[in-house]
Length: 297
Image (cartoon, rainbow, N blue to C red; front, side, top):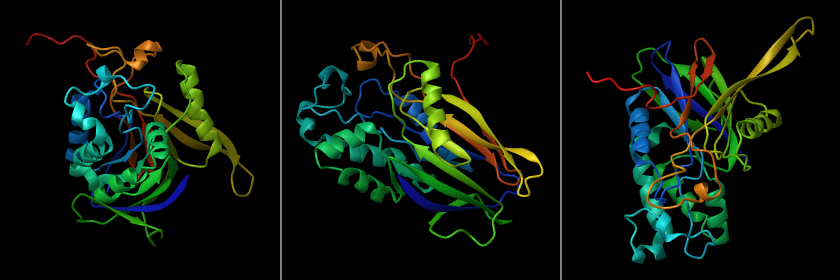
């Protein structure tokens, strides 16, 4: 767990709304990855001036031939047999290439259980360090806090993120974020939301984000608390967010491990929070594609 310091975010538009994404569970190298959705989300983050993001772990499958879960049919069809002895290098190159266009908007990069298991077992955790260094993004390992300090500067174009160990002297608002890759094997909505609640109960933060369960949830968690003089009762809110995955559970042409275990279909794509510093308003949301029937116009 990392206390990863501050991110000083300078911006020019007084009422700017920041979109904070958790891009996680890509599972690169798996044949079931929805590259279309991943490219769409990367393009959205790149296009929107006030979009910022974390990489929430499990950015690759990391299932090597020595792994009991190894299934040649589950590999990306672009992988050749003679690539199998350099999978770690291929993953590093691919992930760096994917995030290169938006690296300056990254708040931190996590590992997930897939990275932790494979890279620890093979003494190759340096691969994750290399990816972070190549992109110039903070390495947050499996979980940690980040304080986002929003500093409005009139006339400044866009936004600029500067990692720091010292808070700025003046700022519009501070948002304390806690991000964890996630854990557990719950296959029900209740089990997944309970895992998020356990993180919210464990830490002090304004926004708590997790991945791992390949689902999207958003919820406000409230606690009663008195004011400083203990004369009035108010409430403290923590917004909780579970982000989606890019790994489809039931792809055609092969049998995924999610299908074997009868997992629920994954919610595809990254979930975002929306924060307006001048108002100190925070919204967490779910999103779905292809809702309703397309017309013929």
